[in-house]
Amino acid sequence: MQFSLGPVQYFWPKTKMQAFYRDAAASDVDVVYLGETVCSKRREFKLDDYLAIAHELREAGKQVCLSTMTLLEAPSELRELKRYCDNGEFLVEANDVGAIGVLRENGLPFIAGAAISVYNQHSVKRLVDMGMQRWVMPVELSRDWLRELLSHDEVTAVRDQFETEVFAFGHLPLAWSARCFTARSENRHKDQCELCCIKYPDGRRVDSQDGQRVFVLNGIQTQSGDRYNLINQLPQMHGLVDMVRLSPQAEGTFDWLQKFRDNAHGNAPVKLPAGDVNGYWLQLAGMVQHA
Image (tube, rainbow, N blue to C red; front, side, top):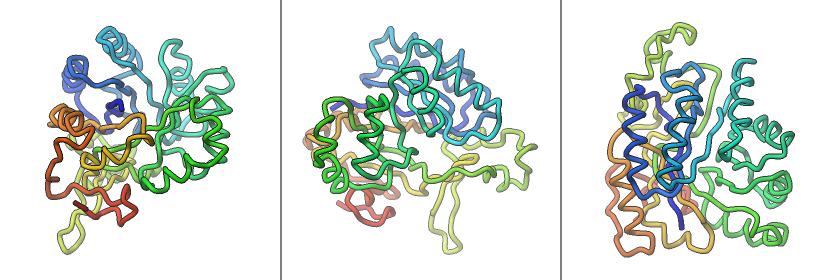
């Protein structure tokens, strides 16, 4: 089982990004995803910056993948998407079907991100035929669902041609919108947002009227209010999951990476902090924390 760091979902200052990836290079993570996946207005880090970091990470022995935007809203974003796909060196995680189309036209292999709606064996087989080398399971699905899907003859026939990856740590990306809810929360228009999301390095918490945390706002992205944490479910993944993804947090990411590694075979279980949940993997309500 390998461990990956997903793309940074939040808007961090350039110095923080650089420091984070220096730590990633020194860590024992296997795979690092780089790229802006949420909002094209976040320009602290550009593609050339990501490519420079990618070369440093590769020299440190990491596999590097570039992640594309999830929601494209302008021709300029399509041009940037093509630059990611045409990078010439690194495997690309496609987070929308348009990216898959570009990569397929160029005869390039790809990773299908969790935002791609893949829910059955026919879709998995079709993507493998199109060049998919790794598949990130949609975040709301369960172990039982994954086990059943992988058992279908269509999938077992091509199982040696792709890896499975599971989002196992971090606030779950649930939805994307043409509206920017972080800007709205500060009574700003999207076009005059002044990049206010940089003030919220782990997103902006949204509580219900009775004080329950229900969502995290991250620009145009809405995330789960609670943090997903499958550290104690790792033993259940053997034979099903090839790679476990941790989504970078503003603090403590590499401490959690070590905890995940230590518990890969269930030898170092962790008492989940309040606010960490694991319901979806167990086919329960997403906000449930189950022992």
